[in-house]
Image 1: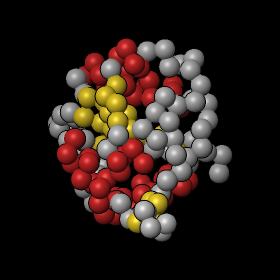
Image 2: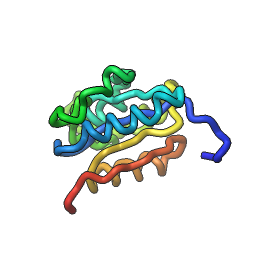
Image 3: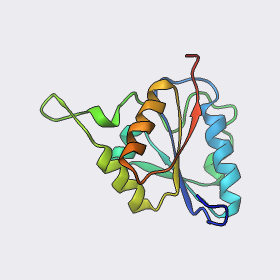
Image 4: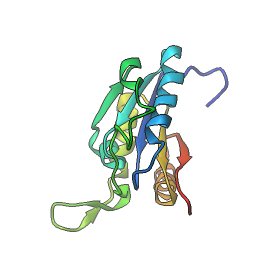
Length: 141
């Protein structure tokens, strides 16, 4: 993104295992962007929420009080967008739905909190094109 381009909307999700500090990061992202007029969408249950377009729009009130709350208010999952469970018992690649949902919401980027697997999933989605990501590591690997 260019330096002069205004950011209008950002998504955020937590993926992989739960750990301390996730809510603090969600709060920091929201509290830094909301005063700038940026809409912040929190996707529920990690990449599953991004695939299924399930989110909450975070506001200042929802971002308040998160520092002392454990876990992640957005919940998490270990889903892999390129291997999502299918109705026939197999798996299917649903990266196209992520690209579509990001475009439909007009997101300038998606912030992903996760470990090695999350970063690999982000790389796969970026190979497809059309989605900007910021990744925040939460791993000991």
